Image (cartoon, rainbow, N blue to C red; front, side, top):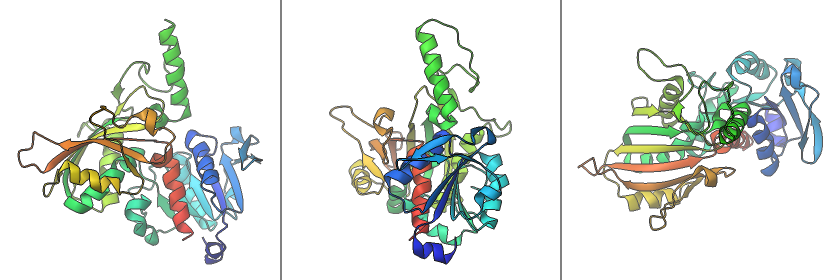
Length: 343
């Protein structure tokens, strides 16, 4: 983005993939956070062109995503999938825009910063026109882990995820709703979006499994991206990613081994002061982070903060977190990056 537009602080913003689940949330975030844009362009596939969507009380007509539709754009928020990002993000940069990309296309590129603003906003300074938005699980996990890592350095991290339908988009959310209704009514239902029955079922994340490592693509992404966000290429991390029949908001069980002991009370105090994090840790009422409470919320909820009794050294803790995949796990993080571009 040119220095002139930075000084004006009223950029032309485009959303590529505007009609998808994350695209809709991007619009909502821009509106709710009063992002100071001079024009919003909504871009999508040819079949969505002409559709009208509301923004700040006015109708905005969706345009087809093309090279020409990106001309004059200062900030382009991409959530149109990896193939579209690879095709059009360089064109947006060539046209003068800074791209904030929500796909996995550029995340592990050595010249592309992978940013969670509360953690590594400084990495944005080295961008070459594209800033990558991390995987939703990596963001949700990193938010509560970072303040602990700064205090006691995480040596080893074990993640087990409970991932909502929202992570697979609006069509998967619809399939969960329809299949649940069919199940309750005793009707057969054939899944079309996901490979397994979703109603009242749990299954391994529906990405390709590497036959050599046994990890699926989601698990590999989460592990690699966590290392990059933290700037810890040698961090020992393992993940098991699972889909659960929840519409919105991912949950993650986290087990961390630290360089030196940190009591649950000390960890709780750190997290209570962490930006973008809310402690939900009521032992007496057995009330901890839940998708129903995280859905629609900006903060990542964290609780079940306890010693790992299997580690006699006292240097390990267990936590449970919940975060809205469509908000902090995607759209909100992207808009926060865009806000930092105007600083």
